[in-house]
Length: 103
Image 1: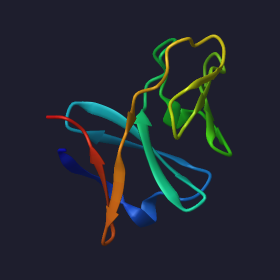
Image 2: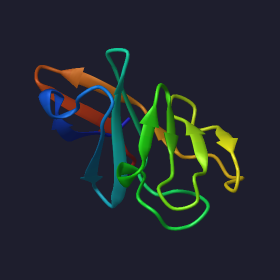
Image 3: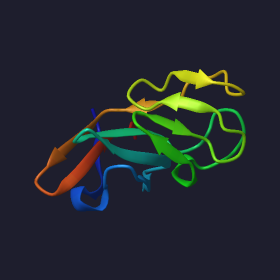
Image 4: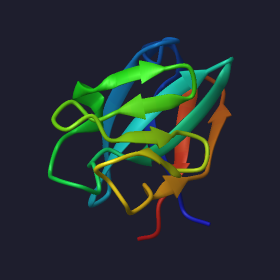
């Protein structure tokens, strides 16, 4: 595993999506029921940043065509997307969120 600092814990508030550049990856960070999740920040249907989208419970909606994804698994829950989101392991150490992104 290759852990990279992605954000401060305090910057990720419930109900919000935080964008973070981790290495060459554009990551979206979420706090859902006290747990931190990380996915690709780019919709798999058309280039759109999910950090500009809408978080409803544990699902994120793309801001352009309203594709819907389950944040914890990346599973597609609503068209027009057909390909799941890439998910990343996330952990908290001290006041920092780390994401496992391959080098």
